[in-house]
Amino acid sequence: MTPGGCGGTAPDTLYCSICVGEIHVARHPTVIRTVLGSCIAVCLYDPLSKVGGMNHYLLPHGPADGPDDLRYGRYAIPTLIERCVREGATADRLVAKIFGGGALQSNAAELTQRVGEANIAYATERLSDHKIAIASHDLGGRFARDIRFDTLTGGIKMRRIAVGDSVKR
View 1 (tube, rainbow, N blue to C red):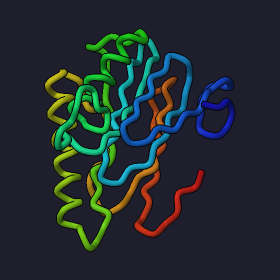
View 2: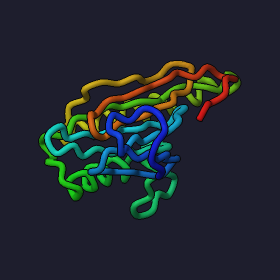
View 3: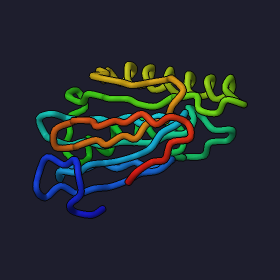
């Protein structure tokens, strides 16, 4: 995490990038960034406490997903909720924004499309189970996404990335 950069709404905003199997939750103004293909990022935000967090998961379940393997939605979603509450959010005020689930590889489009669709379905079902409203989403399609989530405002900056394009820092 580093101070400075672009996208933050507060002068002391911190910046953090997460990868598959990671979660970051913050009370302090932070821009959390990730890049997604068929994976899903769930962003949760409590507008009153200004606590926000993001996860980045690979699949709904793993072949032998062990305890608390955050690469899988089965663990990543409830863990994100728990960590937000631990940092001061109230569960019934959390709102979600979800992204990803793309099908990127043309030679394996059917497989990646099924993975993306399964990830999308899992995220929406689990959030519904937890009674967390989905305020916005950008899901599916044949492109990747660069997501930046501002925990101070709950705002999102998202850029779609066509297959073959590069990701800029």
